[in-house]
Amino acid sequence: MGKRWIPVLLAMAVMAGCARSPAPDPERAPEPERQAQQSPMVGERWQLILLGTAERWSGEQRPYIEVERDNGQLRLRGHNGCNQLNGRVQFDDGNRIQIRDLASTRMACPDMGDAQRVDALLENAYRYLIDHDRLVFFGSDSRVLGGFQRR
Image 1 (cartoon, rainbow, N blue to C red):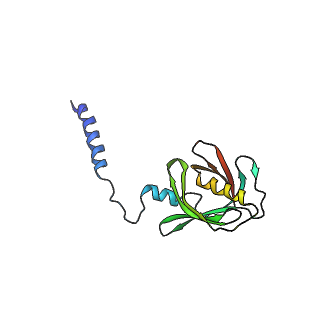
Image 2 (cartoon, helix red, strand yellow; image 1 turned 90 degrees about the vertical axis):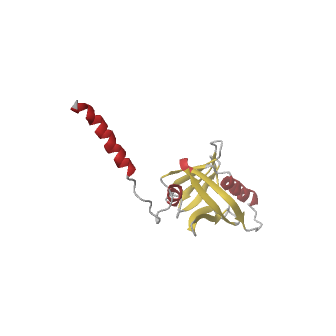
Image 3 (cartoon, helix red, strand yellow; image 1 turned 45 degrees about the vertical axis):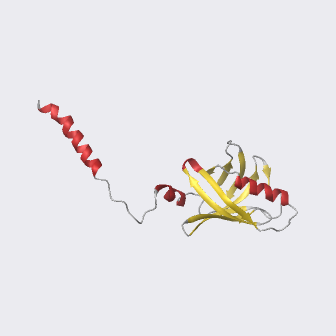
């Protein structure tokens, strides 16, 4: 009869342990926000090396992007090969990325078509993958949009 009480006592001990969860720490950010702040993209400069899967950049000034913290938000800053860029960035589970409110200066350049392709790459980015010093953006259809290298 004494052996029947062992599972009951174990269950009670487990339930008592679950009832004592630590109090939330107001200094810590919520989980999704903390994950975003820890993304390997943040604080690095990424220079464009490929448009699509194989087309190398041929313009004079190589495009780049940087993701920085700015008053609790993440901002994208960079250059599309012609104009300065800025926008907002949000990271989600599964290496998802959203680049919103992308804006640029309005200088005319000989490589304007390529600069617009860089803008489209960023606006259509849905997921990203970082492998060592390489960053690849994918569209929502899993198609490679372009690649960057950490500088």
